[in-house]
Amino acid sequence: MPESRSEFDVAIIGAGVNGAGIARDAALRGLKVIILDKNDMCSGTSAVSSRLIHGGLRYLEYGELSLVYESLRERRCLRRIAEHLVKPLRISIPIFSGARRGLFLIHMGMLAYDLLSFRKSIPGHEMLDRDSIRTEEPGLRDEGLLGAARYYDAQVTFAERLVLENLLAARAAGAKIMTYCEVLRIGTVNGVVSCIVYADASGAEQEVRVASIVNASGPWVDDVLKFAPRPAKRFVGGTKGSHIVVGRFEGAPRDAFYVEAAADGRPFFIIPWNNQYLIGTTDIRYNGSLDRIRASRAEIDYLVAETNRVFPHADLQIGDIHFAYAGVRPLPYREKGPESAITRRHIIKTNRKIARRLVSIIGGKLTTYRSLAEQTVDKLAKILRRKLPECRTRDIVLPGAWGIDRATERLTSSQLLSEQGVSRLLSIYGGRAVGIVELAEDNAELSKTLNDNRTVLAAEVVFAVREEFAACLTDIVFRRMMIGLDADQGRGLYGSIAAIAAAEFGWTPGDADHELQDLRAYADSLRVA
Ligand SMILES: Cc1cc2nc3c(=O)[nH]c(=O)nc-3n(C[C@H](O)[C@H](O)[C@H](O)COP(=O)(O)OP(=O)(O)OC[C@H]3O[C@@H](n4cnc5c(N)ncnc54)[C@H](O)[C@@H]3O)c2cc1C
Image (tube, rainbow, N blue to C red):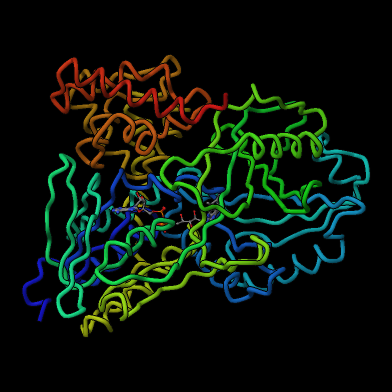
């Protein structure tokens, strides 16, 4: 039997939120796991979402009650297991005369949302009359305003860190994590999965024997299936979604806003995020290249115009945009029908015609990654005919959620950072920030702060490399330290970060230059011309 010779019980292709969640769950239940990503972890769809941990109020319109219920239950769970990363977010829905969704419909939706999130850890909804919402949000458009609904969901400011912490937990439970390793082939023996072949970071082909495979490559699911010996029908039919990020604007709201666009009646978000505003998203069928997805000018114009309409003092211009990003939702393939009506429910697909012991994940939101992982590992147990222990990911908190009080004390008493810096580190690393302080206290060079307001510590760079498997400057800046998501993409610090990373990796000056060029090119690719 293939598994008796396998090095791993399961190979997971794709280290986005779903692959990372599956790796953690499978490793915690005792499976030998390898997870591979062709780029860095969280470099695909999981990094380009609206960053909400939400029930999906809009799914109520399509009668997806069980999805909303599951999402709200998972919201509660993620608030518990990742309290440093997932925070409550108050959202207002303004209601204007002539809108598709009137006061009555919104109120009914709110009541249903509250009902479905029973035992919730955040407050229920309230309805506000016109004067109350105007007093609280004076920048909101006056004309035609009837009132507003207000409710709570949650936000994961740095989804990248949520993915990372799942991988760190997986690694601690024995999983092998391989970034910059592109899977090129799926091997089978007698129609049963036997191995994967991948190109490692140097481009060399490697083969690893595996007893099963989970294809968690998000929008790339069909591309990966092309590497299997037998053809598959199309599973994924993605829709593109874009966001823009702007600074505080005239009349900017205090709360997040969920607004119906005048142009097409679609709701979109204006969300206070990372000291800026994240505005999105669009929803357009997409069949183009998955590897360099950019927000189009038409999408950007739409988001700018709709924001200016709802907050008329904003007067946002293209030049006000700090950066923009876009991605493709890995939704089930549907040839026809409106984009917004395609189910957001995930499907865990096995298909014996392609290969036995191969599972493909179609869909899946950030919000429901944990339950998706649980269901996938339950399925793997059946496929592998193994009796595995019960899933424990509901109860075991993620690595950064341990020891937050102790980390707060250590960071404050070390006096290495300003007050703002202490809260920055806690919001990124949670309790793991202690490891950064320990590095800094051992080495005078690493105890320096890199900026005038003393919020970024040199030790973070070394921590990203030693503890968080960052492999290049872009990983460090955009997916570990998170300063890449600042208004200027953290550009002022690139030089000092490169110098520390060069010493840590042993780069030559030429290597460091090359790395810096790659980092700047990546940062530039997010700018809107
Ligand atoms: C615009 C937009 C807004 C969204 N907003 C929200 C939201 O607010 N809340 C929410 O809950 N969900 C949201 N979602 C949905 C959610 O972000 C995605 O469904 C989820 O992140 C998918 O994760 P994934 O791990 O399946 O895929 P991905 O994150 O795309 O990961 C797949 C990985 O596979 C890797 N890969 C591909 N091919 C190979 C190969 N051959 N070898 C090795 N690796 C490979 C890729 O590099 C990638 O890292 C949004 C999605 C979009 C697009």
